[in-house]
Length: 353
Image (tube, rainbow, N blue to C red; front, side, top):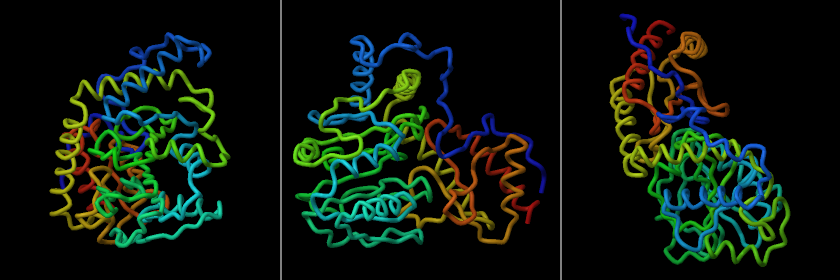
């Protein structure tokens, strides 16, 4: 097979932190507040403006509150599990590593929890979820390229809290915020921002629950929008990434870019004799795309070659998944770079059999 002549213009295909958006530069960061106390009035106003920009960008409803929490999505979810859940029985939906992790954490807390679990590339059965149970699930699974895609499996008058890990869904999925009571995410996926902070979006129903709970780790009851001291450099990065996201066309255009990028990978997979999607088609996420091998192949040599030659960094499978190729095809990824990458992958598959 002929060696490809064109390398991707940017070899960063990691599923998080992801490639920075076009137009991003350190020189464009707002450094005005570096070295300042984060509760100074002008700094507080600056952060509040960023919160308002997030709410407007994501169409978060009135009455919902946004918290910034330490430790990216993991820290934010840990805070929520400790601070809000436990009053009611919980149904945990598991189809990926993170859903399994949240279930294990709930068990450690000795909460009453049952699970609906399937780790084969299909979703578990989502029938007969008790209407009074709190429900926790991952919307979009970065570890295996799967997505639950909607909340249609829940009753329209579900009484328990609906908790979702939205990390790789937010900013590229049209999310039904009014059906979600607690939404947790970090900012280093579709947005391409830094991962220092976790974000929690709480509905009025979730805010009411806080009032009655005995709070533990990073309790939200007695705090405002900041729980701990944040990095103001990270906020400057977030502000710039939000501006570039909106300049690129906000949600609709970013979804369209992801769809066009995924179509390239879909077409490639159909005719490829070496790989296939891990997930069945109806459960695939918009991004990332995760492929497993159909034939025996020297996986490590492929990964090393692509990295050493600056063709593709960080496309190795998630650490708990079987050997495969995981490609972020989000809105910061260029169509021609994906085409170049697939050409090099085809060459590698033939060379390193």
